[in-house]
Image 1: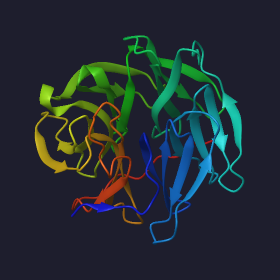
Image 2 (image 1 turned 90 degrees about the horizontal axis):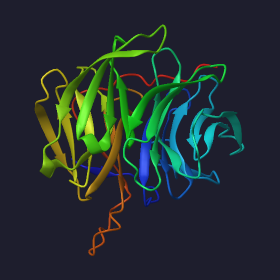
Image 3 (image 1 turned 90 degrees about the vertical axis):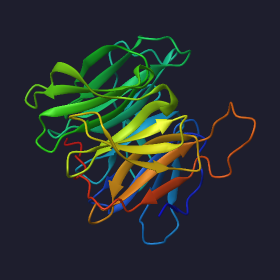
Image 4 (image 1 turned 45 degrees about the vertical axis):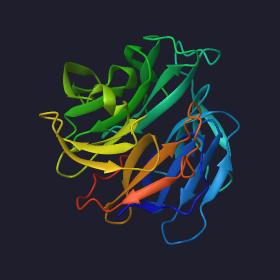
Amino acid sequence: RLDRLAAPRAALGEGPCWHASRRSLWWIAITGRRVFEARLDGGAPREWAVGQMIGCVAPERSGGLVVALHDGIYRFDPETGATTLFARAPGHDPAGFRFNDGKVDPQGRFWAGTLSLTGVPGAARLYSIDAGGAVTVRREGVSISNGLAWTADGGTLYYIDSPTRRVQAFHFDGGTGTLSGEREASRLADDEGWPDGCCLDEEGMLWVGHWGAGRLTRRDPRTGRVLETVRLPVRNVTSCAFAGERLDRLFITTAVDHDDPSPEPEAGAVFSIAPGVRGLPTAVFDR
């Protein structure tokens, strides 16, 4: 059964993540420049304005959060709503680019990619930020940096550059953060839209949001086979994350389709399902 979270809709909802130490679900409104928190106990969600477009949010071990705002990487204090600059990314020009999706790797580094504000293909990057604030360029030639997911053993990173319609798999060296041995883990057909955000479950299967196709799919990244399809009443399905004390509920963010003449009443809402499988623990940024 598909449920809808009682929370404000966002024109471009994205980046759900579970913050275990706060026992809460977090997500963002990119163009709305807002961060949301929901406790999942029926209480009203909290929200904060952050003053810039925001690409992603991730938990910190301290109980706070790390966020990729338009012009750089910041720390976010959920008690005060204050953002504090933590790192600038080399070569990132806010006049032409903004940060997009991101997550924390098993070693506690924060990864975040960018996209061109004017749609220039191959001009964006994927960065990692370590505990001391050092920023490393991990991928260049990216168009729309999107979903990231590390396997339970930390040896593989699944990565999405949306216009390619592919999920790429890389061997991941946890000690250095380097990527190697690229292969195609899955490819979307033309009628399946673009792959957006993603997450892994405890069985090693990949859940992928489909921008423009109104669905979420569960895929075997070893074979590329689609195992399950969840239909949503919204065309733009942006991302997903397991949340809750048992990580047994999957939350799905969505966005408004501004190019469609018939508005969707539930576009921008956060939905959830009980998929019958649990997710992996959320890695935290370790300063």
